[in-house]
Amino acid sequence: MFLDFFEKNIKRYNYSYYYVPLILGFCTSFSLPPYNYTFINFITFTFLLILLLTAKRTLCGNKHFFLIGWFFGLGFFFSSLYWISVSLTHDNSLKILIPFSLIIIPSFLAIFYGIATLILKKFVIPKISFILIFSLIFAVIEYVRGNILSGFPWNLFVYSWSWSTEIIQCIKIFGTYGFNLLSITIFSFPFIFFIKARKMDIIKAFSLLFILIYMIFIFGTTIPSLQKNADANDFTVKIVSPNIELNEFFKNNNDRKIIKELIKLSNPDKTLKTIFIWPEGMFSSTYLNELREYENIFSESFSDNHLIIFGINNLEYFENKKHIYNTLSVVDNNLNLLASYKKNKLVPFGEFLPYENFFHKIGLKKITYGYKSFSKGNARKIINIKKDDYDLNFLPLICYEIIYSGKLKEKTQKFNLMINISEDGWFGNSIGPYQHFVHAVYRAIEEGTYIIRSTNNGISAFISPYGKIINSLKLNEKGVIEVKIPKYEKSTIFSKYGNKIFFLIIMLYILLILILNKDKLILNKDKKLK
Image 1 (spheres, rainbow, N blue to C red):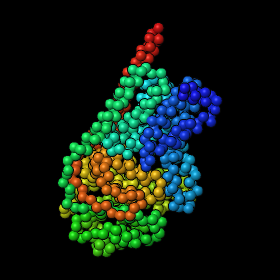
Image 2: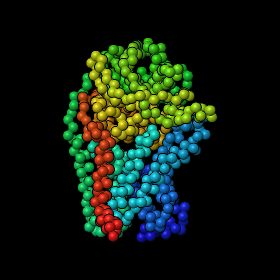
Image 3: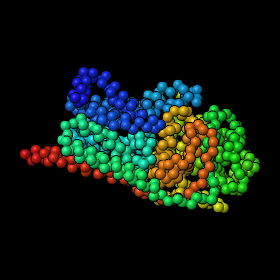
């Protein structure tokens, strides 16, 4: 019935028919945080497969198959990434670009889904194996989207499960990309009811699906219960979320006022061993090598018992060129620099301007403070803090560096904590900060480590290795989270092998597809022999 309906409408409405995948993509975005209407995916993915099957039956060309995926992606990314345009509202000179960002970014990202459906054209068959082929191709394309050029692995379909820490525990094994592949398969399973599959095949397929979901859930409920309580370090960590308005950072020579506000909120007790963690970009007018002018403020407010971690820009000159780095720095109460990390995953247009020389000529600049683009750091190294009674190894992550599954570190690196500092105020009260925060939860589970997240106008939190939010501040909430860091260091299967697990699952999918289509392969072989 449904297949006949779509088949007739493809012929009748021609290009106006593309409103269907556009709406499907738009609706799919509501399965993601902060909405998490996961059930929507079971509907939209099923109908997307039906569209592809009916397009094949009506002998549609390559262009039509590409446009089905492209319109699906356009609806999906337009609805789920509109918040990027909010960042352009903070600078009057950039507001003219808002309509372009609303259209160009989703249109570009939609190309990946267009390529996926174009590839699928050769594999569309009214069989159960088509679900596996569809899932495999879409998951691989999602991986490519997350890695090609600078990579943008935002809003993978797997984030639809973020409401259930029990379900997503399996990424300790599969990783985000691996579970993304399994998730697409799960969402697409209702397609079986729209093809002429044998009753026994349907029973077998749903039995396997039930076993898979059951095992994932049992694993997710069992693993956290096995966690043993670890002794906490004898120092305190204060995660500071100052909620300072962005326009305060655009004012010249305003850093002294901001520093005093941060110190007041931190409320340091000189007798207690404490690490203070301030967000990204707290000093807009001061470079790291200029911090000494505030030495008196720091020495009067803090003591030898204190360490301060914060985001600040660093200015360096080499090869007769000026280089500015977005850094995470660790200082003591006298502003002696103990460690520093230069961000190496920069945000296109946010922190650097591609083809900068050309765009500067027409008056464009990066979105964040200043005119010149940031330079990229060479590597991400573990920061080791060994001072007096402090013994801490942590992985530094600035802003959206935390979204890269399997690419946070070298496999040999060991650490007992991840610290993520960010500034999500660029995106206002939109859905963007919620999506960003969920990525941190997934990374905590994948790597099996605690995460400290300090944001100015975002969601600050202390997250356990099992994705549990131990303590947090709401979006744009001013405050301090005071925690003790457990002495915990336990690697996961994914942290050891990374996305090799994803490629192993791909091989298993290919093997299963070949097994399910062995009759067709034998038939084709016989025809060639004749």
